Amino acid sequence: MTDVRPASAGTDGGVLHTLFRSEQGGHEQVVLCQDRASGLKAVIAIHSTALGPALGGTRFHAYASEEEAVLDALNLSRGMSYKNALAGLDHGGGKAVIIGDPDLIKSEELLLAYGRFVASLGGRYVTACDVGTYVADMDVVARTNKWTTGRSPASGGAGDSSVLTAYGVFQGMRASAQHAWGDPTLRGRKVGIAGVGKVGHLLVEHLLQDGAEVVITDVRAESVDRVRAKYPQVTAVADTEALIRTEGLDVYAPCALGGALSDESLPVLTAKVVCGAANNQLAHPGVEKDLSDRGILYAPDYVVNAGGVIQVADELHGFDFDRCKTKAAKIFDTTLAIFARAKADGIPPAAAADRLAEQRMAEARRA
Image 1 (cartoon, rainbow, N blue to C red):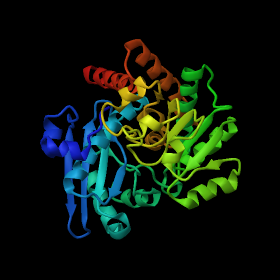
Image 2: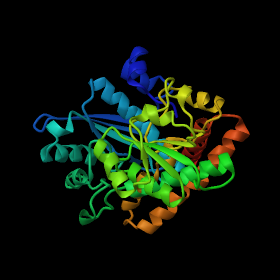
Image 3: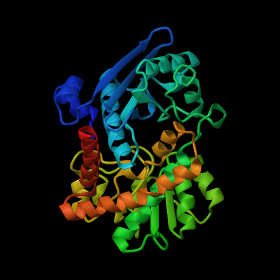
Image 4: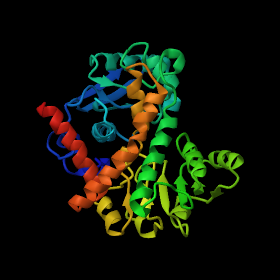
């Protein structure tokens, strides 16, 4: 699933070119939303409803331009189509972005106005949390829109989805270990985690219980301190640059921002497996081939981090944690299937994942 990057997309025709003419387009609907009274400016992008109502979170971010916001919505919504397809969900892909600094402009009035725009789509798009939005925000959005997930238990939701996200990433990592070393365990392996926030610190716990050696880093010192206070056996390094150069590193787990796998990081990466929770880990198209050429096994991010979307989708049917955990456990089998398809077709795992997702969507369209 190729990323739509704002810089490159802007140079070859901009938003409309991306939407209507490029290979990254194909979106069914893009809605521009504005409520002057509250200051809301938002974009809702629906990539596909072939498998069912589009499902994806709401990102609240201070974009450099409106065009960058639209392009991000296009990219993220397309990614959700692929993620939902491979997670086995009966949902297409959608994403929304609210333009602005959430620390400065987020308000109850703005969130209520946003909820009204989501409601106007009549269920074609189901929203949830993303960067810059939280469970409490979804509780507010839900007051004007019933197609809202990621709510608090008190409001009929499942609460924080990071527990199942971390669990799913761990299952993907176990599958990676099976493929790379013939044993579905991280016991005795050195795993480096970049970003130990909501998901990363939970991944630490899974790995330690499995017998792994864990090395961490985070831009927030308090996040590192929290992990090391609870697990003093964990080693911390100064930054991601130091982490990816760690001697004897078996697995690299990017769990912070996107673009972690780039032309700069690949040559110095010591790990033989990459499997983490961050979205959009490939900095640009072609990185997946570079990884493969270097003999580095890459577990596609949108496959292994699907535990969260599995949880929010389940809210629509009355949340059951055990049912969700059973579905998230299947990430292990899906990841292995992707590796097998990649080997059979002679392509990188990222390309194999795209083919499997596209196959499921195409079959749904023909049905």
